[in-house]
Amino acid sequence: MRHLCALAISSLFIVSTGYAQSVETPLKDKINQPCTTNDSLTQRIQSHMFDGIELSESQRQRMRDLTDQFRFRHSTTDISDLKAMQKLTLSPDFDETAVRNQAQKIADQQVKFQVEMAHVRNQIYGLLTSSQKKQVQQNYDYRIDQLCDINELQ
Image 1 (tube, rainbow, N blue to C red):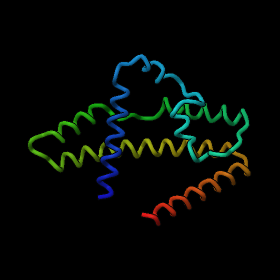
Image 2: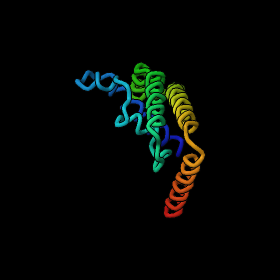
Image 3: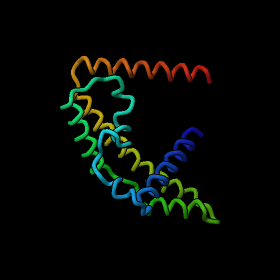
């Protein structure tokens, strides 16, 4: 059940991302511009992992460069894959094997995306000083403790 929920959520994310990229809007040109420190992609990559870390200007610039490279390098979900999943989902004759294969194809693309993001985070982590790395570890330990507390409440 947990796997099904994760698959459904990731599929919704993929669909919404794919739709947002395909829609013609005045913001589309802005979306395709390189990341700046206020862009959501930059914030997502740096979110939480680097909270509370004081960075030098050169570190910030290098982080921006890495996120820009990621943005132009990362793969996106093919719209035809999403359309195929929609067609399979709405078909009067449900074909579980075909849906499973299509879902796996989409999931494989998401795994590739996550690996690329982890690589960028690793490169960013490599830019940090030893004291900054220690702070990153402390932040991580704190977040894990919070997650454990939440899980205990459920």
